[in-house]
Image (tube, rainbow, N blue to C red):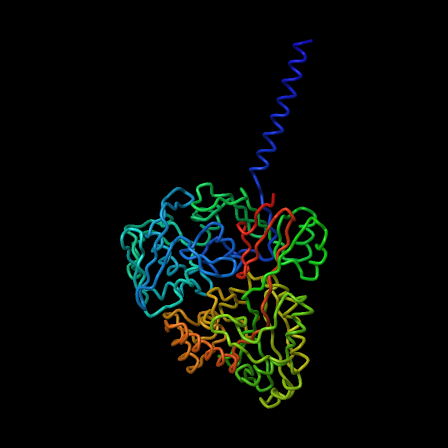
Length: 543
């Protein structure tokens, strides 16, 4: 009897022990399941500057200068930075940092990173390369201070470094690494390719998470970096699943398949009010949706006019296109109020934006009049190319724009495609009329103008997204002076002058600024970001 009782007691005690251990393991192994609106196209942090890609990179890699949720600069792998003169900067590198493979972070890793950016033929749009091209030299001072000398005054260097993700130099064969692009920077083996990052081989960073798996179209899985130098993340594993449809994403959240989703439809957010199980946040962003036109070629491949020419080369036609679009209706009916009509390329109040930009009014009668003055009283036809899985309601916005243009006589067809097809084709200038989006990550007007409006100059790293081929010497003169002017007050006035010129000539037409939304379980607190990045670190369990 005593022996039997003892066995039963031991069995009960063992069961309780197992249950406690399982509960403790569950408490420690917190998994965050995220439903993505748009899928990252690569694990390579220098492949394409796109928000989904940068969001993924931010989990595994880090930058010298970081930015917080409101896009304010913050210490990253550099704890401090300062300009020494107009062309020289000093960055104090953080000590005690190690990559996920245990190797120490060194100044040579920074130099290698910038060299790799200059040797990445697979990169789309050269956005990262444009920053590296502005650097003349790099050297190490006192062991932990990196001295960066630029080819010309570059007042926004610290801002630009928020998007250059630092790699471990050991992913390639090399001798002594140095910033010497003319002599391959000391690299003796082949430069890394995108495929080596997607497989996980080169996905070695200093960030809070490590690579586990990347399966296009299925999911990205990350594991917590237990050796991370900063605050240890709450989540031991993060799973990111692409679900392009807003409805299915929300359904997944409600069904318990996801803990957090990005960009639920604004009209569906009311379903979450008061249910006690879910919450949401809506955060304004600096991302502008815009139309870019081919103004360099005549004829243009996807424009068909009675005279055989390219009507988009006429500023009156471009202004007519702008006047034909009802931005307020798009913001209210298609974006469900989660957007603000754009009258310029950066929200009011940001550095370099016009303090009171003239409203881009909806005036279909005025649009028809301008078309007639330009010699197209009966209009013409063209194709609007757009993504269907990158921006909020992008395909629906494109269809609305096409309908507005067709009403004033510009018969417009829409070719909406996945971003994996759209971006490479746009980079090859296969479109005549395309819808795009751009988040001004530097927080000032120069960001959009540098890439999308300035005349192409690969050596200077400007105009690399100017797929429409726009070139205006007067604009270039003012803008180039602005980006090399160190005095903030003078630079702001020059930027505003450049913005006015860009709006007068309208090679790109602003549509609206997106607001981003995230929905999540009620036992999670989430901080939305103005740069639209969805980060596991922005979510924390609520006890």
